[in-house]
Image 1 (tube, rainbow, N blue to C red):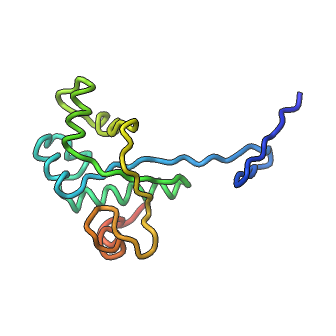
Image 2 (spheres, one colour; image 1 turned 60 degrees about the vertical axis):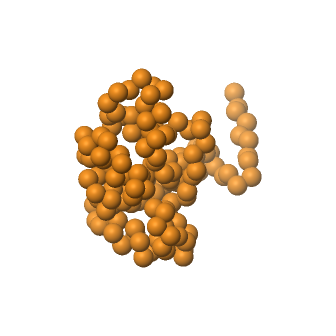
Image 3 (spheres, rainbow, N blue to C red; image 1 turned 120 degrees about the vertical axis):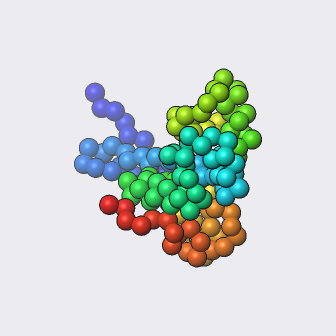
Length: 146
């Protein structure tokens, strides 16, 4: 039996077996500076997941996004919001959030704002500082990826 291969514009077979290579888009939640401070103050046990300081958090986010793109996946970022996170936890009956709850947030049905990563050349930084990415989070973020 022969299975027909449907060719879609902008998609081409990858590999010798004519299978398609699909890209995965990963959502990365970052906590803006003020929201990060609220999150850590409210749930200090989550410091291991989000970093104890804003600089540590943005370094974790940068590293996470860089490793994802290194694996040939796309990254969209969305800002976290403590009030929305509390509502998410309440809706799911969670009293003390865990790492798994952080990964499950946000509820994508609510339509969070998505920011592509890495920012385009000369674009403002993803963190919301208003500064250019190359002068803001980029120099503080990656370190060594090995």
